[in-house]
Image (cartoon, rainbow, N blue to C red; front, side):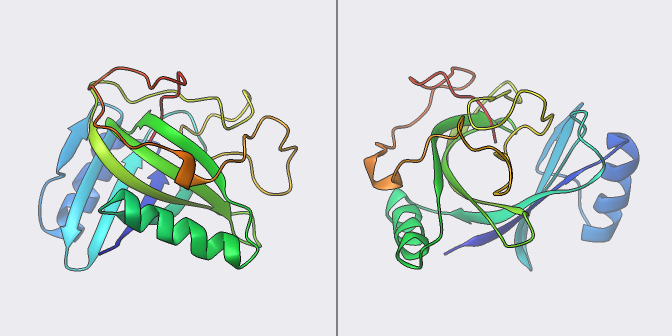
Length: 176
């Protein structure tokens, strides 16, 4: 079963945690000095906020899936429809280890598909899939930007293994 994912960049974590805790009726599931996440069941949403130097507002949207098979099925469906999928592979971001892929909608909004494989003690700072000038942790450059630095792979080629918390992946990637 999929869980809808929303990530918003904020200017003030404390103020935003207070607001969203009131809105959702409970404290965040994960709360760090620069990040908070609510794993809501009604509606089924992974809602995250961060203060990582990115302009306040929508950072990205996505779907959190429960297995590698579900992630690969989603990727296959997008690729069969002719959508370019950017595979990131193993990543450390938002205090979690995951495997993920990215697409951009016609407006350039980044959509992430991912399966969480473990936790991390660090936020992550993956720059392998985005220009160095972009301050967002996770999302690759939009579809209209230069994509030479973006490595396109099939998620079927990624072996999903449990991650060691805080350790970068074999490819050195670390992000959300």
